Length: 122
Image 1 (cartoon, rainbow, N blue to C red):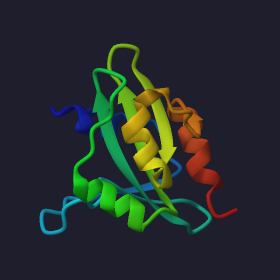
Image 2: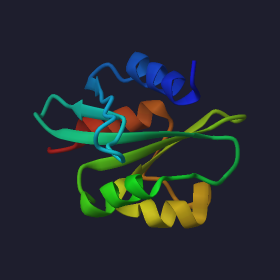
Image 3: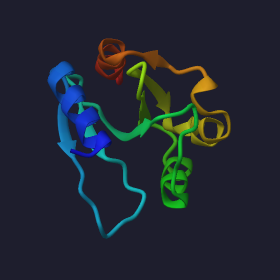
Image 4: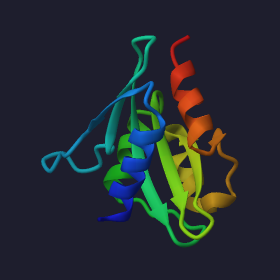
């Protein structure tokens, strides 16, 4: 199983208060991996990334998506090894690409990410 698919399985198992839709879009490059919907009726997207180092790699299409849609878009990164999960707002994609995991995350750990997603739109 691909690393990002494993991260999705963890996310789906641990953040059950959010309705998750996995987006498989071959026609529009750069579309995030997930569409989330919380109990407040708030939609948001999540790009999943897994890295073995502090660097996070993005395609030009992924960068363009987050630059064009800076609100209600997020990037969840799992660092293999320590297994740390960090959440970043999509508006910070250029900083994340430049600084990697040294950039301060808006949320740390799956449980905290779930609480962040639940609070959207309140």
